[in-house]
Length: 437
Ligand SMILES: NC(=O)c1ccc[n+]([C@@H]2O[C@H](COP(=O)([O-])OP(=O)(O)OC[C@H]3O[C@@H](n4cnc5c(N)ncnc54)[C@H](O)[C@@H]3O)[C@@H](O)[C@H]2O)c1
Image (cartoon, rainbow, N blue to C red):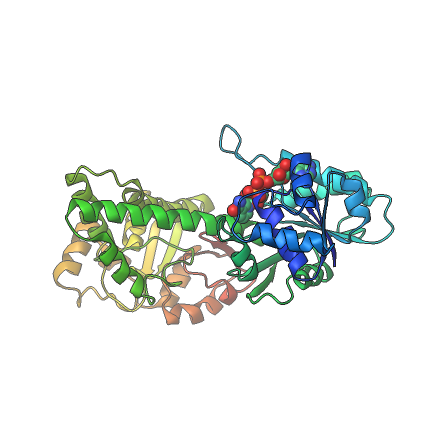
């Protein structure tokens, strides 16, 4: 393929050189003449292991060239990768002015072309940027329509500085969010020969995935560091602890607990987090990440309450009472908390949980119930149907298998607030709200 790469910084210069090494003809474009002339002379514009040699080899072979002229680069290529910077503004917001400018240049340069061109945004841009900034800038300058006159895709970059060349050839995944399938296929063909899962999705999802990845990586570092600080304060070897932690690929280093939904609860997580944060404070340690988890969890519980309140109907049916399906443990169940809040606001609530039977509850569960919702017995229903009969609003609180089936018995005019994602099972006639989807 004939490719132009706009922006010859860390991402662009590595992409340009690596794409040339895959057999493509590549022209690098930058507004900085210093960078284009470095590349044109066979040297890397940035420090990156292996990049100098790669650039030298492909400039020598004629497969990699550089220019400061966007028009010339667009005329000579069929696809452009945009790799310009997207820095923070003073207030933390994303500065898209570089992306907008380069899109206007590319759009204007596409105008006199009579062959289709594909524009791929590789820079990191927030969801909606493709639709609100990139596409309008390209369309205004080219006088063409995306998906008709030219192809458009978002293709986030996952390489890391210092291992960028290796990462380019072995990325964790290739994510392509294109406006149409033909463009997605063209972009995918760029990476033929690279062994990575190929994920085709919408532009918004592709844009978001990159932010989720980076937020997660940052959170992992901060989490590991706070744990390390507590370990050091308690004279424990933090590396030994985290090595053992990382060996658990079932619950720790895994997809467990990562699906959006309702608040956590139960007899362990809240109590143990509280104790750990308390210990950290006793050691005079500031642990903002660990300390923010319970407040964040509370906000998630409040979110469900607010959703119910916002519907404006008084009769509420709740499916599930314990913190997850398959247990009668009510300790720190966020559903108990949610119901207590709703009762306090005057809602008429009925609840069903097949594992919660007042007569059978004993010990800590009984005490917990007596403390939080002593009149639980009066609002407990016999089965799902009693709850469904009662409620104008039905809250699905946990993933009990019986609730899946019960969704089919909801009736027109009811509203479901789904905390567990039973979306597929809810009839179309029912008004549906997911807690965070
Ligand atoms: N650096 C990384 O490790 C990394 C990894 C993944 C994604 N990203 C994302 O990729 C994007 C680029 O990051 P970077 O670190 O390579 O940036 P960078 O600042 O190193 O390079 C950007 C380049 O774009 C050039 N440029 C600006 N406007 C231009 C225009 N109109 N025409 C041509 N060139 C122009 C600049 O002169 C500069 O050389 C950012 O959105 C960043 O968030 C970076």
